[in-house]
Length: 223
Image (tube, rainbow, N blue to C red):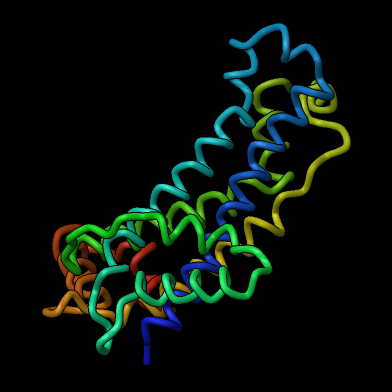
């Protein structure tokens, strides 16, 4: 059963994992510019490089996460809310005097907003899609293939950072944390319907209209 404290804890862990991915995506682009000075001189060439899109992927992931959090953090879950549970965690950490966890600080400062289960289900789908998109696109093998398509096999070495920065572990960890979060969020309700029920209805309509399932929703409902 999903409880507010359990969900709050998972939101904190997911927030931390996403922040790490954001930083690593930016770091990979920065490493390219640092080790291949050519890109410092020609910004238009840099913007055409596959790495140029990496920071935006991280920003989109963080935005999708924030949207979902703000939508459900104020929902009543068996007499408690996620935002209240995070507030208690913040207070406890402040009293212990060992410093406040960065993710707790970030989440406690966010404002909740009114949202339906239907809206939250769309946000959960977006979050899961963004997380899996990053994981599938940001391994060095995939990025090398994209660079090869632009510069040819002989141009790969001079158009990737050195040494290569492997960010796959962090991207994989973010997907794991988002998946854990999704499992908990599917069972919570806006007072009328659960997010899981809304996704099931959306999937049924997708099949009816398109003759096939939505892959992202299918993966979420398996969690």
